[in-house]
Length: 360
Ligand code: DAH
Image (cartoon, rainbow, N blue to C red; front, side, top):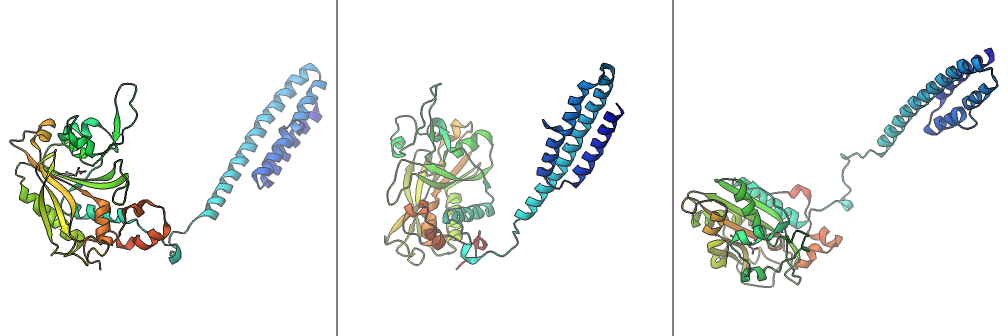
């Protein structure tokens, strides 16, 4: 009896000392097995209880069970301390010093599309526009109908839409073919005055020298009670001059058609005159860079705005086209071929971002 009590005390002291000396998770695990495992010291003591008289057995059994709990607690505590220490050590060993200078041969580059987007956003931000985003998976209503493009309208064919499989409830979604649906999303939720710019990816079933199935657009929308065509013209001129960092660029506004604008125009830039700017293109002549116009009364009406009181202008531009012109990149498809040499050549260094003035 005495013997048993003595053993329990000894065992507890032994375990405490051994745990304090254990310096790894594995060492603690070994102690756990040596104590509580099938052939562990405490397990064996518990087994020996059956040799004791019944009364004694209950008393000693209780004491042994208390020790079992204590042992588990001691092991767990030591384990947590060591685990934390091991984690701290591995975090310290894996630490990356981000202040180390970059190795020039490994310097990352910014993709021309990211750079161009940053520049466009900086210029419009400076003009007082707010950036907003819309979903890339759109419904028919926002991508077409609300933009005054009803079903069966020929403009729907022009867009070569990627449709998603029809859902069980009969609804069919699509990948947006332009950023113009963001106009609708903004008009549905905000009241004028509105000055927004919406960058993002758009998708069309098209792939050749001058088309990729995914590309980027930036949409602009201004709505207020005294907005006219010359406001739009001025805004676009200011943008083009700032973007190309030249104030004598020859551009023209050519009458055009978009279902969601009336008094629509396309803005062309003269690549024959701007040879220096566009070292990339063998094509010499007018190049379209922006579509724009006064927001169609149907669009305002469908968003609950009275066209007698509110007017607006909208514009949309292709980011890749602008990047090609500014950075002299001849082939659109190369933008999305994962070729590191291309990125090293055309990519930009991060210190260049985004500069409206002072490049060259
Ligand atoms: N959404 C047109 C397209 O993808 C571009 C566009 C034209 C946007 C005129 C506009 C606009 O906001 O007013 O071809």
